Each structure stands twice: as C-alpha cells, then as structure tokens.
Length: 218
Image (cartoon, rainbow, N blue to C red):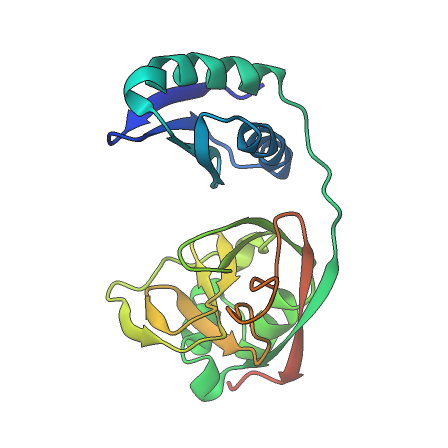
C-alpha cells in the first residue's frame, strides 16, 4: 500500500497526499474515499486530485486534528471504487491553427506529426480527476513517448476545446484561459455548459478516446 501523509492547508482544509507513483488503482481508492468523506456532516467539500484529496472542513478550529487522524485511518481501510464508466469519443482536429505545438511534440518525441496523431488517438484514456477549470479532465494513459514538458512561457489565451499535453498527461481545456500545455489539436465537443442540468460532460472513471477529423499538419 502506498504511504500517505496528512497535513493542514491554510485555515480551513486538510490534505491527504500519497507518495509516488500515480496509478489508476490509487485513483480508484481516492474516488472511494472522496465518496465516503462527502457523507460526513463536518465536511464542506472533498476534492480529489492526482494522488491526493483536499478536504474543506466546516469547523476547522475544532476538527482539523481529528480529521487528519481519521483521514489517515480511512485511507488505510479504503477500497477501490469501480464507478459506472461511460465510453465517450471526442472528435479532434489535429495540427494547424488548432494544434500549433504538434510539430514541436513530434520533434521532441522523434516522430512525425502524423505518427503523433496516430499514437495519441490509438489508446483509451481514463478520466483520473477534474480540476483547474470546470470540467477540465486530467487523463491517464498517455503513451510514454508523447510525454512533453510544459511550455516555458504559457500562452495568455488558450481557446476552448484545445487538446494539450502537459508532462505525462493529456487533457482538454473546456474554457478559454491562459495555459502552458503543448497544444496538438482542438475539439468542437463542449465539455462545460452551465445551462445544462449536468453542466460537466466528463466524470472521474469515464473512458475517452480521441477521434481525428483530419490528419495532423507536418
């Protein structure tokens, strides 16, 4: 079992953080623990992350030390959560204006732009957690060869729907925002719509595959 440490975060929250590596098995246990925490009256919100959970407390002055002890114990007792996983295809236009960093990713990986597109769209990804902005999916399963450092200078504006690579993960920007991931394509599929009853398209545990709409630009 991965070891975990718990600590205070600011004045209202405690964090449980796992030591590396990041694995899908650990994320499933984090999902289960998040579900359990959400049922506790002293918890305002439990926010799953990558190898961590942040717990916002209702009465942190009285509950923080108890929460740290309980989190540690519950992690040791936790089991994997196998959520109902939906299979979702995301159409992507790779390269060109929609994917301005495709050639840079190709050069870094020793592949052609076309091979990057083929490899990126050849695997099923799992939504490990949502964060950064409403509906932004951090996806596990990126082929190791496509891992890519973030940009040295983040862009001031990344268009909504942009598909990017940051480190060993790939993801999709639901909204226009500054960002530092390497952009390889763009989707027209909305990931966040505040007017819908369920505004966020994806959920942790969903399986996702990118479907190229045209070949990357070499």
